Length: 357
Image (cartoon, rainbow, N blue to C red; front, side, top):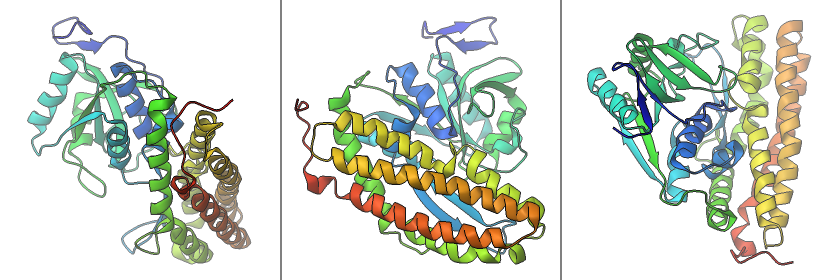
């Protein structure tokens, strides 16, 4: 057993030195815990951006109670993108066996290695809302005979715990976005990367994110998806069963369900701000600044959209949804301009040489 793991008593293992501060978003919070313990300390916006985490999806079907507006890539794609770009070793384990799944996690914890878990937040005892979401991600850093010790977002409490039985149910859940008891660890070959190491990964992440956003495969995704949402939001009073309750839920999911606010646009704005500092004095810095300013503008509008949707539910007036529709069209225009600028980064020929004075 690693000397990083403290064993007391025999049925209790807690890894020493794990940073248990919760972030804004679940997957970046878990990745931050794993990477910091492995010696690589990056900000949450940088993790989100390097994983090309920003996206948009409008999804609705007869099987859904509510229309869904999402602002990020699919669960775990962010982790895969991030580790690939930084040359990190991502070890993923999946199994249909609950016993084997627990043995895999326990083995890593006993070796002093915190583990990321993808599971259904509905079954976690500490979780604030009882909604099924099987794309939730936490970091686990310890266990005893009765409980698992986890790190979740700041909104959910940061350092938290849940019973082993509830953890098993959450990991075994099936449904949209679920995985087969997925767990993962990350190994860092070059800890404490400086800006010179990060810049190639930053350029790759930004341009890939822009390309996906500007060239979506279907009309529900990317900039086309935002236009689709603008057309559909008018009908939401007829679409949902209880507008007073349902529209409030939609607005809450946009602003306060682990998105960092503004449907992840605040996180991406802060990522671009940090990138601009690293690129200052190099070709392409002006494009990143342009993109940052445009996403700062769209972030404010996304928050306004959520407020209008909530007001529509509270007041019973569809006029607020009409205004939200107009803002969504404006957002699509702004974010298309932002991603067009950011997507041309490679054409600007950014080098990785020292900054010019």
